[in-house]
Image (cartoon, rainbow, N blue to C red):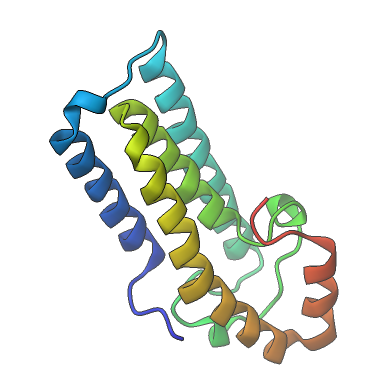
Length: 150
């Protein structure tokens, strides 16, 4: 399966869905002390993860475009890529967790799960297959050392 929607757009659509759910199910909203601070911490952490991850790709002079993994010219395995094979998606997930906390709707956990499932099936798995073709044993070895998400 080939992803047709860029992952940042998928994340934005998920955030929009979470807002809609929180709006229409406002009676289920949870509030707690420092809620905005916790939400902002997740969002800032997610943005930082994404920026550092993109920077690693730029430093390696390879494509950041998730829709065209065949354009990859080098395998990035340093920095955050030592801990997760997909820090950009982890960053997006952190941003979405921040949005969910900010909105306070526990039902939005479903959207978070859907995001992880969608990105895994429609982006990560096809990308991994293509990277295996391009980088062979090096990528397979990397996959055995580093988890897909966290």
